[in-house]
Amino acid sequence: MTGAVYGRTPNLGLGLLEFNFPNWGDDANINTKVIDAAFSVIGLSIKGAWTNSTPYVNGDLVVDGDDNSLWRALVNHTAATTGTVTLAS
Image (tube, rainbow, N blue to C red; front, side, top):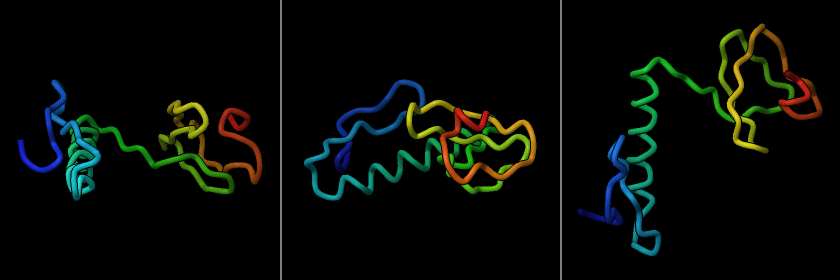
């Protein structure tokens, strides 16, 4: 293993990181790129964390940062100016 990586996950081969290692962020960024590529291969695109006053289109996937659940927009809309994704569902 090189850098901060001390092992690998069985499915995606993500590096398991030793966080007190210098420049461990470089290896963390590689993990992020692997995850992004894996999602694109299966046709899954997550828009990011759900936020108020944001326009969403039918099919957008967003993450609820409060409970880490994944939500899909069923219609084009702009999220409410206040509240949470669960109130907007």
